[in-house]
Length: 425
DNA sequence: CTAGCCTTGAGT
DNA sequence: ACTCAAGGCTAG
Image (cartoon, rainbow, N blue to C red; front, side, top):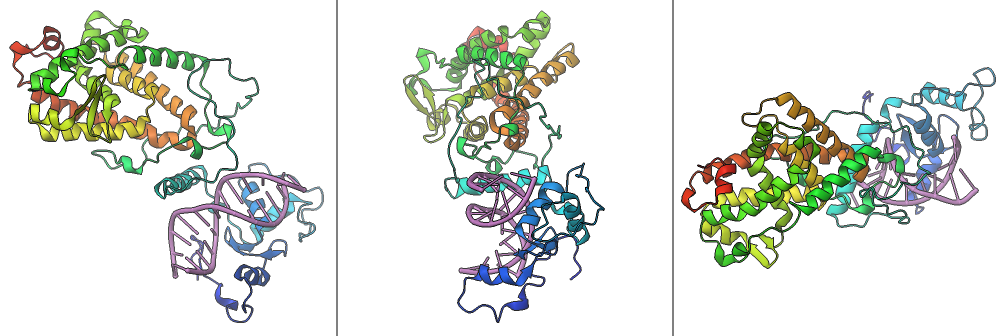
């Protein structure tokens, strides 16, 4: 009886189960038995710790958390009933508090977000189409093409700057907890989205374009586009040479990369190569068919397993790609930013000015966050953001595992560039 | 803004 | 399967 915290479900519910019932609809029965303690209107039950009607409930939800309450035009003691309740918000709110309504029970921004995510996830799990009243704008938030419309006067982006760490078990991130964000379940409310600054948009387009023109495309050596060509690990490594060239092309286009000293450039590149390749590979993984897309057809993972013998490694790799794909949602901008975050890794081998690298990396981490906020709303961005960063750190161990294996290649059969870049000679 | 109606996850 | 009590949506 005295639990003040939780909404005491079932408290005085059973008062009139018996008599009123008959064969009338239930809600009708209940409706007639409870009375709003604020205004006397019919009540359905408890709202924010007091029995109130729907309107007082909504009123309280709208007003209780406001910092500035409207003032009473009279003596702060207006009587509130079903007729007068809307005349004086001040006294109505005061009465709400007086009869015991608790503003603590109004979900805060974060709780609301969690709740909505739960709903969203259930919807997609049940395969149920979300209730759509109408499908309005379908603006592509992501190519900054035009001068964005003039009517966007939303300055008060109430950004929470909430720090990243949601509940997450370490190890490998559990992507099953991430909802499949699709267009229909995204909030319609414009204020739920960040508007990227002009500079951010420029940065994003440039980097996405660069990515698409380099790493984003197929780059299979014709020699290696058929299953029969994969006989051993060397073949796999050599096949990657084309990709490495593209990677180099990609990073050279980056202003931030060019700003580094020659030595730092080499260090960054060398320490990220493997990770970058693994990251990029997710683009070409076909989850359904468990294979790798090439211009000439699918190469199944089992072929590669046979070629290398490293079954667990391939399993880890494909699992990684599967979850990464879910997080990037086929969005190359995200992959491109991740690629850069991986590139500017302050932990890398023989980096001379780590802080500078870290600063650059920060810039792109922030860009990633902002992009997500603009693309899938503040509501979903945090889950995705944290999981994506988790993916970046998982890359480290995945890359290390691959590196160990690489030590076993037959150096004489490997292309010079690959030897160089992988430090294999 | 209001207030009614609706959808929901959790709890029984 | 039902009830409760949150939030969402939206005519008016």
